[in-house]
Length: 318
Ligand SMILES: NC(=O)c1ccc[n+]([C@@H]2O[C@H](COP(=O)([O-])OP(=O)(O)OC[C@H]3O[C@@H](n4cnc5c(N)ncnc54)[C@H](O)[C@@H]3O)[C@@H](O)[C@H]2O)c1
Picture 1 (cartoon, rainbow, N blue to C red):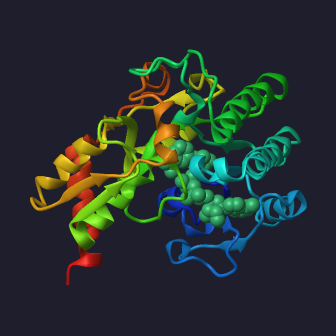
Picture 2 (picture 1 turned 90 degrees about the vertical axis):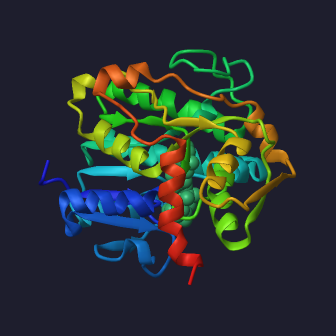
């Protein structure tokens, strides 16, 4: 494993900011090449190689893979749920083309293993809402969800047909303090901390009692590393695994924040993102990931809130 050379696509985003650091800790700074659209190196990615790379450009992508002798790709480029609803065809093109570029490179033997994340957005209004199982009706209602269902099927197809070693999880909404969220429906659960510390109040675009599956970033990063390091035979599902962290609604996270900031107040102005959330699960069931490669979350709601407030406090309190 130590001889792997890793390329991260979309490394400057919410997940990439944390994942790049975690991979560099494991493999060494020089073995992990971060890439994104930005010309200059983003602060979070300093400390190791960075290349400006448009993942839509297959030739440029292959050049980087060849130049750095890349063996594994972590594909994090996507147009997220809320943004893709505003530009459906552009979202579809970005999400699918960049995935195909990586799957094709793997089929041609140019890389050995790849990670591509799916999402709870694969589920739709006909899916069971609570403890949504691994295998169930999907039928998503967003462009983003459609691209994730199609992506999962293509990953499985490339694995079955061509033996491509592609691995995936369905991330819930992710909460982190380092990278800013990139235009998803669950972004409220990050914004709320910044507004609580800056202004002591927050207006939520998700209604008070709308629960969603969520996860603290350290758990998400650990899940990503664990599935990528599991023996291939243990990764039985080559679509994408449900992984659960916690489930809460805006009222509940506000209550948890009030344990530390008693004056914090929340009000509600639900918008189109609340409609997207209405068709997503409230919680997911993840026994396949637990059985196959030993998945186990560590953070619950209060532990996540405590850590977020400690991590962010320095930025707002003099
Ligand atoms: N954050 C979440 O809550 C969440 C939940 C479920 C699934 N996911 C999935 O995880 C992955 C990463 O999500 P994220 O939250 O870090 O997203 P993000 O929007 O924060 O980051 C995506 C990054 O991709 C870059 N990018 C966009 N177009 C590009 C292109 N053509 N070439 C190169 N880079 C490009 C952007 O500049 C950005 O830095 C996505 O596949 C997303 O669907 C995220």
